[in-house]
Amino acid sequence: MRSSRAATGGFSLVEVMIVIVIIGLMAGLVTYATTGYLERAKRVRARSDVAHYAGGVDQFYIAHGYYPDNREGLKALVPEFIKVLQNDPWGHPYQYVQPGKNNAFDIICYGADGKEGGTGADADIANWDVDVQELKKK
Image 1 (cartoon, rainbow, N blue to C red):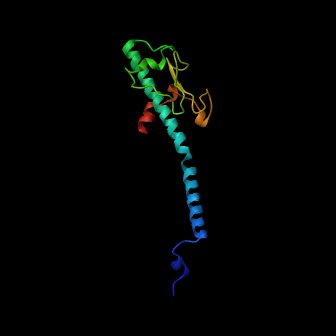
Image 2 (tube, rainbow, N blue to C red):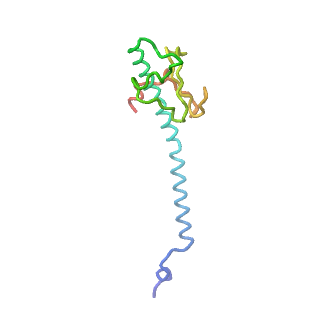
Image 3 (cartoon, helix red, strand yellow):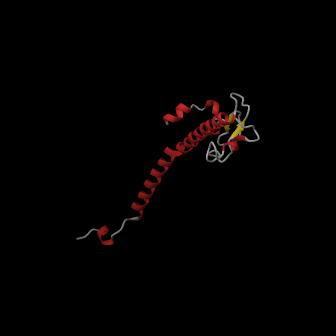
């Protein structure tokens, strides 16, 4: 005699619902575990960009004997010293100030909020606190 499941050849509604709930829980756990990675990756890219642009400004100085002024800004580096000038990972332009507060020039990314100051994802990233050797390790 055959069982009722073999005769119908399918799963019951309860079995399907249990599988859907398990898949939903697993998807939620994966999403929760990976949410910080995207923001961290954006901050790492911004630090790398700031270090790259600071190197370009230094090369500009070596070639021309002066730093670009605020009017010229980072655009003066294209295409001789950097290929492309991109916005930060949050879509805001990098800020260039010459003379800077802490150096001959400052390159600043204002973080996710695009405003000066902040903490976490909104924290500023500037060339005076980017350690180039630290970036090479990553």
